[in-house]
Image 1 (cartoon, one colour):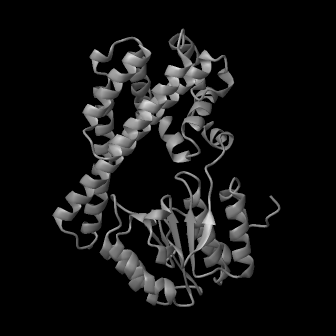
Image 2 (cartoon, rainbow, N blue to C red):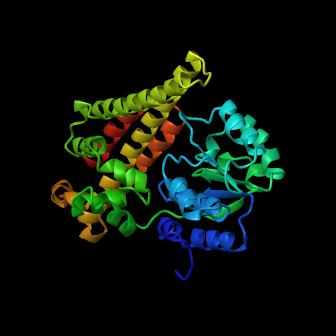
Image 3 (cartoon, rainbow, N blue to C red):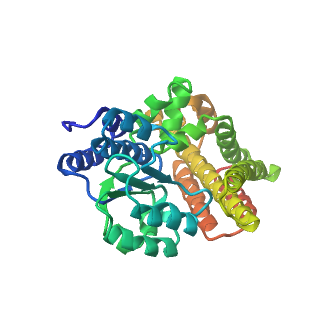
Length: 370
């Protein structure tokens, strides 16, 4: 790459040359007061931001190696690194005010710098973003703000314009595949890397028991349509699987918020319940969207196998099943099937009934492909 970076930051930006260049220049010239790490989910923004924060703190510390070591830990015990991640679907307004805006006025506990990182910054409400503006406009000289966002359009323009952008791209499939090889067989790792579309977190989910189940249920829906068996209602298993994952997410957020209450944080029971429910709904929706992407990828792969192009298949660990399902498939109809699935994804964004939308999709696919 030709960029001179500390080891931890070089490793975190190994597949992100644009980000590496910006961060190398920042460390060389002296970091600015605010950065926006932006790019798709799973691209490595979190690891790069943590490594960058560690270098800022190390450069201003009496014992750089010790400061760097503690800053790189997750969660970090370094008192001058504040890392804020949303517990549910949104950042709580008071948490942004207390842990970032008001805390930024206090001098470092040790060394000469403080770093405040806000993960999923687009999850801040407008009230929080507007309150953060003054800190961005007139930060104390020892404060550095790192905002991380997969959806920067969810941030106010006044926020984005006051941050130096650090661009991240989707990870190459080969890089994701290499990162999965210790957790999955070579064929499954190759498939998850391609189905993850450059999102390492999503690819990792696909090789968990829950992820494998969702993938099988998505493929099962397409197979049922091909076999003329939409009446078996395979979408119900998919909905149940997504619901279970959403319930787990809600329980996790509820437990985290209740632990904070036990530690002395004031938080009404109603607020805890609402945040947990929002987190559960959000995760459920994410899983259903992923399932539809997996269904579209399966139909796409059927067309690829039908066109004698197995080298471009995503589901590389299921070639035998693809070859069986692709027998006699009409390529133009397969392309139309992918469009039907994508149309259903758009409909779900409009809050239509999930069950009715999936049921309608399966019957339409059955008429088209069965």
